[in-house]
Length: 265
Image 1 (tube, one colour):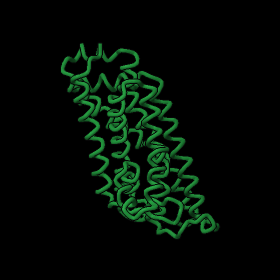
Image 2 (cartoon, rainbow, N blue to C red):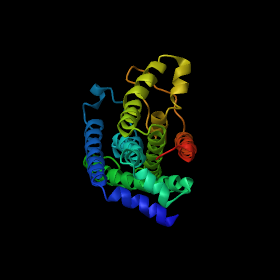
Image 3 (cartoon, rainbow, N blue to C red):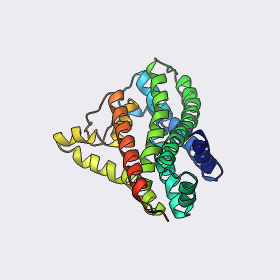
Image 4 (spheres, rainbow, N blue to C red):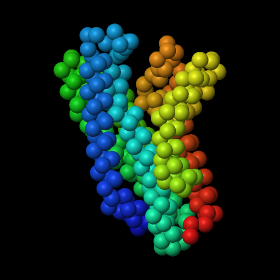
């Protein structure tokens, strides 16, 4: 299994995608940390509808703002990991080298968890570096309590789980371009729109918290506001983590079942 995992990692790191994604992750971490830090600590923050936050809430928001973009990037990586193999027909040689297909899927899962965590580390290091300087210059605590460390650690898990969700989508939809557009479109456009519509109903506010993006927000310890004076019900951080794990696990299981039965010749 170790050799198969190394092979999957080699497939990823021998392409130009890995450093392109790395640059995007770092830039998004820096940009959102700077934007949130400067906005939330400014004297005019109340004019933008920003309520007073504790130092711990402020630090979590500043340090994890870039993850809202980073998880879309790792979602795309998950889709492309298998989508590229179907597109270039390398999936055939992969299964010829490892006839037991379930081992290939397990290796991809392990590799993607590591890749997602690696990108999470890049995002959090860059956002923490910029955000801590801004918070310190504004007189706020850089590390208010132990929950900050927990939130940063969970950020690594989040990106790995979103990569697994992307892997499942890539297997469900073998067409790489279609899978990529559908995955990002649903996560970035459809889900927020449906969440907003559900927030107009009492039952919908409870239902919307089960969506992957809402669960991600819960894990990071932020409040999921919809901008119309409505705040959605939110799980505790561990509840959000369990929901994301359930999504990733379900997608991996479905993907494995389809891969075992699909003709790839």
